[in-house]
Length: 392
Image 1 (cartoon, rainbow, N blue to C red):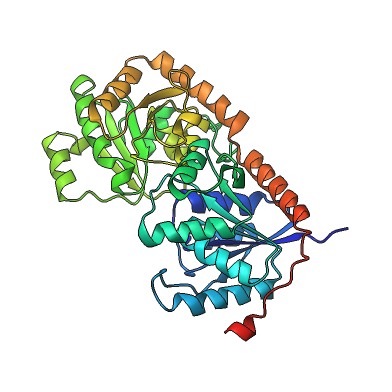
Image 2: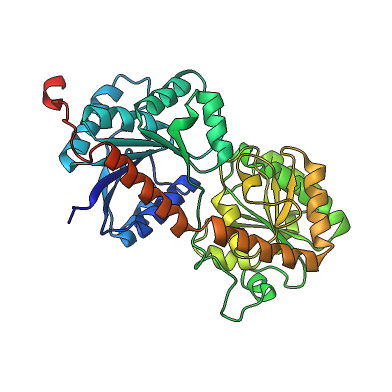
């Protein structure tokens, strides 16, 4: 019987984010009879590292704490290559820009048979970042993307060949994210979080970044409350309002009904309090948050960016609006709140879409099939590593 393929996953940091959450799912669900995973965190930092312990996966500090332009990146990359060689990696799968670049170079220096890069967003690269992204693509056997829109963007922006990329849609744990079976109603979940049970809750799950459209969400909710005065706005995530946003919230009369819940570990319960889920991003790959909300049978209003339109079906599971524009976002939320029966039906259809095409188990099975296909093509472990001692 063949030994499990040794896979090293590399990422710069394990802070809360879509790619990091995705990696946690992969590490939990990967078939350990066929694959032996290890996480290499280049910086050795991130508040999600503690959760890796629950997966039984070992974590290695990659010791790469410098950027592309630092002369120290060369010895750091050589140290990383020694780690890959010492661990006997059959496959290295890199995530996000720094790991895609440094990890791919180190893996090739170490003679790792199969190297993959991962792209999970539509972020324009320029200068050093673009050259680093292109280098990582060139050195990889395959580039995985989480949406057709991301694949097409990477092809256009980074000149990555289409035939080198594979689309594996993001997936969520549909067992964890499903309508609650504990007898609790939406009203009861609202009360548990300190919100009024009888008034609608419209929420976003995000990090405070301009491209996530927090300002547009707040402005839209100020408009919505002119028609629905009791509507409550919720932001989940490590969000603090700056002076300008605070002034807008106060002037618009939203402050009493704006709930900043911070980072949460009980997201199924939090989402149970929502009547409408909003994604107001300026750009996106494939949002884990939107998949989680749909899996919880929540109707969605989302900006039509990146891969969002591949999961949110206009008029079926939610509404799609243009990014960066407040009035269409506000009108779509209002139309949903005005038709509760339609919201319920959209939520049900949304969960069906996620269960059928965007479950975490389906995502990981597709990744496993890709790993085995690439390993077979490259003869598994037959490559000869470079002599790293000689080039240090």
